[in-house]
Structure formats: structure tokens, C-alpha cells
Image (cartoon, rainbow, N blue to C red; front, side):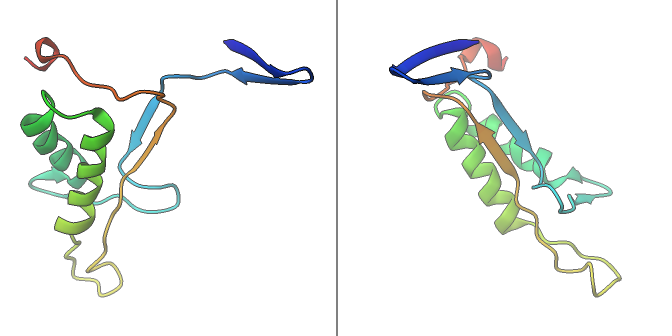
Length: 107
């Protein structure tokens, strides 16, 4: 825990810092997967990390993952209500700097 006094009577407490949470969909919505190819989110995540992990920040890559999932995937079911649905991943971060993965971590 980090405590910082900003003014005489104002104290800011940072309970959780340097945390990144990435989920495949925002609360209250459904995530989708292809029964043969798997989760849309994981497929996009693997694709982006494989191509860009050595050169891009985590935040930039997660933005790309969100764009790929939202743009490139759409449900295709026999039910008119669930066919044509989209999904948008959600990333929440308390990082205060850009995070880059070290090349040794990628092997």
C-alpha cells in the first residue's frame, strides 16, 4: 500500500497499483467462441502478441486485440436473435507507464 499526502487534509491511498485486467467481454454481455477454432478473444490475443510483443506496449497491443475482436468476428448461429452478434473485450489498467515485454519472456 502506498500513502501520499497531497494537501494538509487530503490523503490519497493507492491500494492496487501496476495492475492490468483484460477480460474477453464487459460485464453483462456474452463472450463468443467458434467450436472448432476457440475463443475470439484468445485467437486475437495470440495473433497480436505473436506479431507485436517484442516492439509494442501491452496497452497498445490490448487496444489492437479489442479492435480485431470487434471488427473481424461476428456470431453465426441458426437463431436470428443470436446471429450477427459482436463482442468487445475490456481492459482495465492502473499502470502509470507503458509496459513492454522483454524478448526473453517471449520464447
